[in-house]
Image (tube, rainbow, N blue to C red; front, side, top):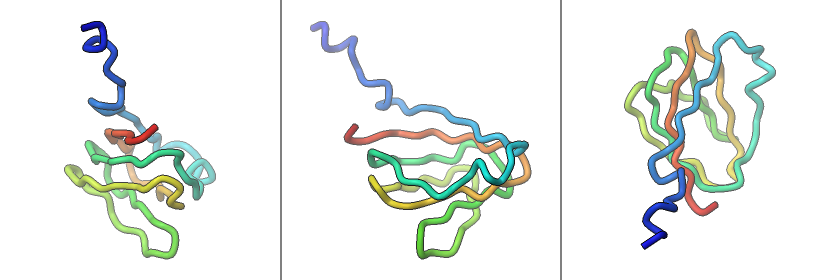
Length: 90
């Protein structure tokens, strides 16, 4: 019964905002320690790039997955980017 109150926070997702006023150097190539599902909530002009692929424009409503240890990066846009992150397998 107590377990019902111990849901992992990631089931509902985590909202994260990326600041368009940060230096480009803040948005570097990196890997994550778990699989993630990303939903774009707000933001204009931001791009996402997987290693070895061309970047693509992020648009409100898009949902995509990033696999654990998959190299990727954000490319800064015009205004702040707001996303929902759902973590799997952490």
